[in-house]
Amino acid sequence: MLKNRLAKFGLAVLLLFFLTAVFAPVIAPYDPDEIVASDTLAPSLSHLFGTDDLGRDIFSRAVYGARISLTVGFVAVTISVLIGTLLGALAGYFSGWTDGVIMRFVDVMLAFPSIFLILAIQAMLTPNIYNVMIVIGLTSWMGVARLVRGEYLKIRELQYVEAARAIGCSHFRLIFRHMLPNAQAPIIVAATLGMAGAILTESALSFLGMGVQPPMPSWGNMLMDAQAYMRDAPWMAVIPGLLILLAVLSLYFVGEGLREALDPRKYHARS
Amino acid sequence: MVSPLIEIEHLVKQFGAVTAVNDVSLSIRQGESLGLVGESGSGKTTLARMVIRLIEPTSGKINYPGVSDIRRECQIVFQDPQTSLNPRIKVGEAIGEPLLIHALLPKSAIPLRVKELLDMVKLPAEYAGRYPHELSGGERQRIGIARALASRPKFLILDEPVSALDVSIQVDVLRLLRSLRDELKLTYLFIAHDLSVIGFICDRVAVMKQGELLELADKAELFAAPKMPYTRKLLASTLAF
Image (tube, rainbow over all chains, first blue to last red; front, side):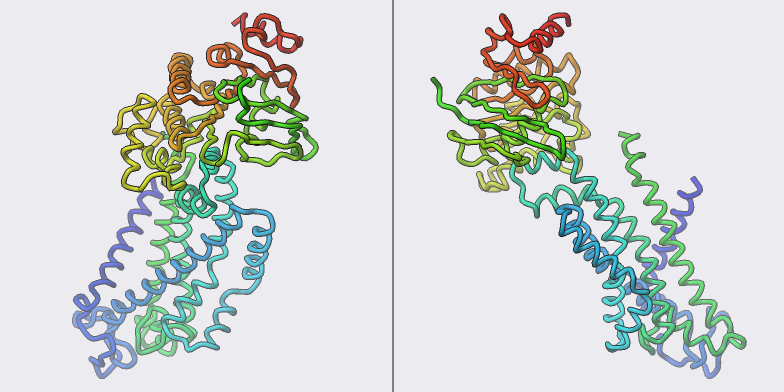
């Protein structure tokens, strides 16, 4: 019951963030890059979240930052779910040496501390928003792969899979038409939780200057800008920090809620 | 002598140290209904799975003199209709799938054939739009039968098709299977652990125990004068029931 309420809260927050991101030009009172004040102003009625060190309106930057952070999170998690699902499905379906090769590759990828791997790759590439999405996606699919592999190992033994083989279904059809829809519940949960992780990684990267590049606002690089002014202008750090916290927490709540709602044991109890 | 549809020669299947099927030879004649009885673990299902190439034998050979495309002409109906239908695939798509993947009909003609198949198993056409969990066990088994018949097979394996159903529905499904066989001139390999079910539908009966073929005889002969003590025991237990 409590979880349910938290999930609803999370969903509401995410919806709000999503709408903010979509309608950013309508919602933001100023251009996010425009210098609207001659000084770093504290939050007030004319500047809801105050202004930053360059005199830009933080509310407007946060609104556009939602766009960047959510897009990066969504695209990155889409890439990671696609790779993880494909490799996990192949490993679980074929098992044997295919499984061995794929899962050893997963182990190798997991053995790298991913933040350093991402930083190293980003250092070689130009750190722009597209590279951030791709690099985060390419380094975060391993959990999904393991999860999907486990699901496929389980589903493979079910009779309807054998029935589909008996009528002559191809491997491709078995993997994607018969098994994938039955594995989708945990994938959706993993994607939701994965998006929280991707947003955090994006923030960390941008904070370190290796992610979204200024002047393009993201919650992470707003935090970076705030570092030097923690004492004089704490709102510069608190606002993006809170937004990241809210977004990640909401995704976790929704993910947990989905996990509970899609629990197969509960599913069977109802049918 | 009727020509054989499928000939099984010295078939062996081992799972690790366990021998599930041990040196079984028999032939399935065109148009007959061959019953296969035995207690659970006697290797009936393993034998059936090898016959339609769901698993490969450890040794031995299966010839298909009367079959050219196994995946199309040999089909199987499974024991448990709860688990043998994909919960995420609608009934109509499940029945039409063999037609789609073997390209037996143009895509646009499939719904009509699905309707025809539903009619053959005495289910209303609107079931095509339902999911398996919306159906009862007996209805689901009819869907399984319709799917097996879609590609116009010659040979059907029925792996205990009624043992998971309510007794009241068992007879209906058995009658349906018998009339379909006569109508479509099908050859059956009918697996059961219950001889009374076999008696209802089969011409010849094979008895298996611990992976070996104990006895193979015409139904009347076997029921009247079983040669093996195990068959006598099986018969006795049926009559008692």
